Image (tube, rainbow, N blue to C red; front, side, top):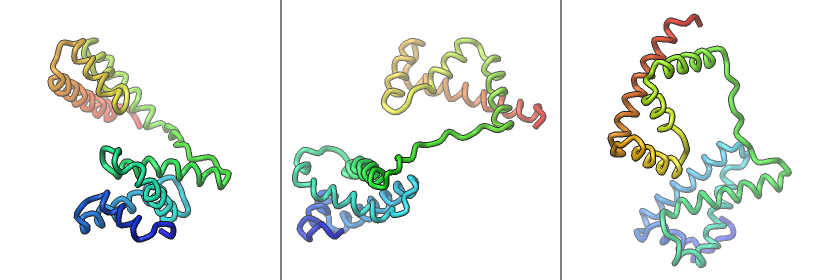
Length: 182
């Protein structure tokens, strides 16, 4: 935290929480979380990058303090992405892109069992469960609202129905695994 003076640090803490003790706890929690994020990305210097993120946020705080809405931790996480990309650029290494795992025979067997179990469902249930688990984040929420309207169910009733179908699929896949040779 070389670049943050005491006044800047105090402002950062008061932004996190008006109670100084709770602010300190929140600061430590955010710093540990940032370090974990950088560790998960394969950084050899996660604590340094966490400190760089905190320093960057502290410098930007006078500009954003009055207008920023939401949990301050989210702002730290957003800044950490830029810090990570900058570090990767400096090292002339590409940012780590998640690699999709290779599937083995057991995974292939599970996929075949799932397909077989999906084929055994009535068409309406198959469509519902496949559609229910599509999309991610906010798009998932909107998609599920539209799906509930399409099938004429309340959103909670849709959740319950999808959960029941999924439970039945899980049982079916388990039975199929037990029957299929490994």
